[in-house]
Image (tube, rainbow, N blue to C red; front, side, top):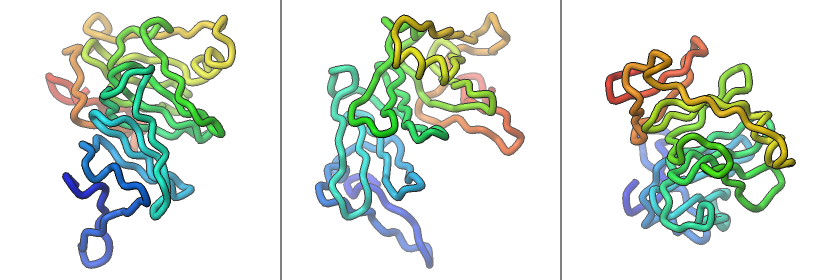
Length: 193
C-alpha cells in the first residue's frame, strides 16, 4: 500500500498493516511481498532493494544488487531447498539458505540478458525467466553447481521468435504464473504465452 508499507486483508475485509521494528518499507515502491512458511516476509522494491524479516522484528535489507543501488527487483521465488531467488534488472540473484549475502548472476556469468522479470520453476528443476528479449530457460542445479565452483558451466537457453514465441518482449509489470495444469503462463506484449 503506497506510503503505508505492506498490508493484508483479514476477517471482515479489514486492511491490516504489517509492522516491522525498522519500517523502511513505508516509503518504498514495493514490487512484490510474499510470506515464507517460516513467517518471514520477502519484500522486493523498484528502487530500494530487498527486505526480509518477520513481523514486529527488524528487516534485513539488501540495498544493492551486484554493488549497484537503485536496481529494480521485480519479484522473488523460494525453492524447495529454501534458497530465495530474485528477478532483477541486474540479473538473477539468489540468497542461499543459511547465507547472509546475495550471489548475482549477470551477463559476465553467461546470462543472455540482464533484466529478468520473474523466476518460475517447472517440475523438472528448470527456471524460466521472462525478459524483453524472450524467455530464458536454465537448470537450477547447474546454477547452484556454478556458484559452488565457477569452473562448472551453465547452459542458458534464450527462447524467442525463432522458437515460436509470437513476440519476444515479455511484461515486467505483471507476474507470470504456473497454472493448475502445471503449464507456465507469461504475460507478453502480444498476449498470454
